Image (cartoon, rainbow, N blue to C red; front, side, top):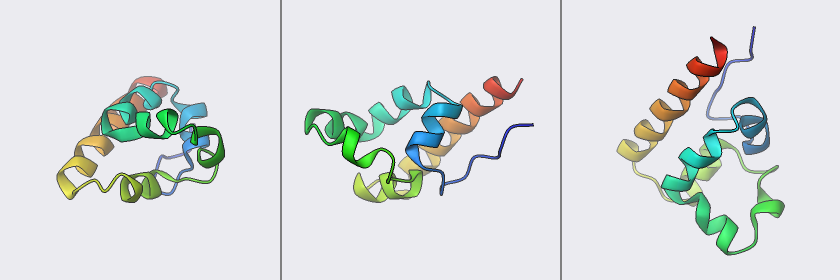
Length: 78
């Protein structure tokens, strides 16, 4: 059984569990980390919750992001 995904998961762990999650995060500003060439520095320290704060996502955007991650998780789990 896979470990449950929470907002406290590090992005590194998230990408290991669900590689497609990176593409979802791109829609929510992850591309800024790549463009600013800081992805390698922050990806192992940043949690999903921290990512939402860093990108200043409102509650609706966070809810949408969470739903997309959960949908991917369910596909991987099956």
